[in-house]
Amino acid sequence: MIPIYTVDAFTSTPFSGNPAAVCILQEFPQDDAWLLKIAAEMNLSETAFLCPMDSVGNYRLRWFTPEAEVDLCGHATLASAQVLWESGTAYRIEQLRFHTKSGLLTAKRLDDGIELNFPMEEVVPCESSPLLEQAIGFKPSAVYSNRMDYLIEVENEQAVRELKIDFRLLKELPMRGLLVTSRADDPELDFVSRCFFPALGIDEDPVTGSAHCALAPYWKERLGKSQFTAKQLSARTGLLRLRVSNERVLIQGNAVIVVKGLLLH
Image (cartoon, rainbow, N blue to C red):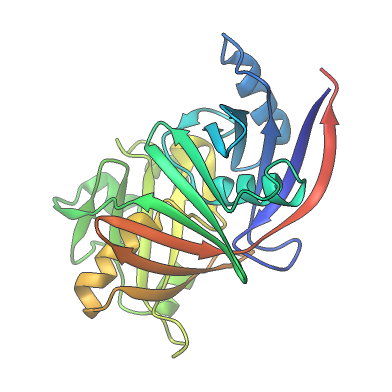
């Protein structure tokens, strides 16, 4: 029997933030089909699969949506770290090292949460497209992209909240997804966002750590600062504390285990 957990990430309150499943394996199967079946069964935006490499905090980590494996996922990494520490699996290890498709990622235990060390995924200006404009219902003043996503800034937080997406059209774009952002109305926050990934089977992701690997350096250039408090404006919402440092993005957040169980098959 294999332990599996459901964890709400980027929140300290159960049933908010972004839920992820975390499954701890002793080894990865030769065929990924079983991993995809588990991810589809859990039916969350991400299921993380962990496999220990040694006894000092090194783990192989892979992430699957219900439809595909992805290269980078923040909230399921945060959830994985929470499970390893809270379950006692990584007792006394203060920094975990995850070996992933996006290189080495670390998670450090803090007094008030967990800090992830992720690669910066800067965006550059790019051409808009009629398909993108049809999917969002307007012509953006500027469009940016990186290896994963498109990013657009809109005029204010209300525009972020009220945005209507044609997911059928957005799914046809040759990118993982779309990040939409603006300055925050709340003076305690720096910026807000919403993130859409229909090509991965996730129309709107509740809280997206990997998206902030692009959003943080984007707002660093716009605001001339390197530390931020950000909020993702999905229905579940989530809060992230961010710092850009040496081509990396440090992402701080909390996580709460809400379900513990065993895989029987």
